[in-house]
Length: 302
Image: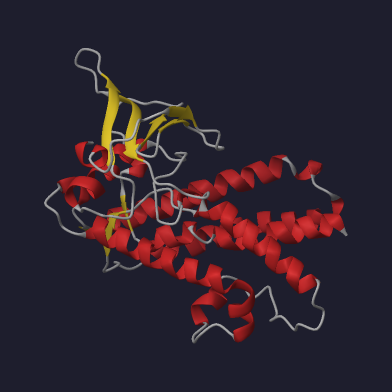
């Protein structure tokens, strides 16, 4: 906190953040932001734990520094984290809304330029992994700034997870090897999640539009094949390392640099688990979802 206060001596005026969040936030001038959790649980708070690790041990410069926390302790019970105080990062919004704005402008420009011949769509996210080379001149002209921002976000994502994977001596962040038990737990988790979704689909078949019934029925019929596909992860020992990861990483949790999220979607025990770092990249693929929203908006205007 002292290092943040030493930046300048201006008066700190508090105001309540009006941003759409699942936590309540109070911003103190241009120095601090106090995040008050609306849902609280006893035990070590993973947001506080990761924030302190990146601030105090990894000295990671691209996430808001943790200045302190407000905890409630009753008797011998585990402390309950009520709020986290972080250094405030001035910003123009998160990467999710930035992406929507850029794509909205892009689609409007393309719609107004019928002479353009855009590349085919619908190849899926895997096509991005096959792509090599520099962006075309057309891409640079229309979304060059966004491509640069995406490259920076990729670098910051890698740097953050390298910091989390560094063996700092903190046992909670020490990398671990994959084990057959962990592989089995992955299979059980995927099976349970898919089973719940398919069970919900079965119960609501009668509510679906008629044109969706064939696809929904075909999906339900493939349940066992899906489970068998999941089970492949248990058939051979995986020689890899798992580390602590951000746990809830997506475009809405990034400003111009990765930051901690405004909402927590997982229980604490799950958030503190070690995972394969590419799992964080899977969460960041929400760019594909973002790309569809401006298209739907334009269709609604036509």
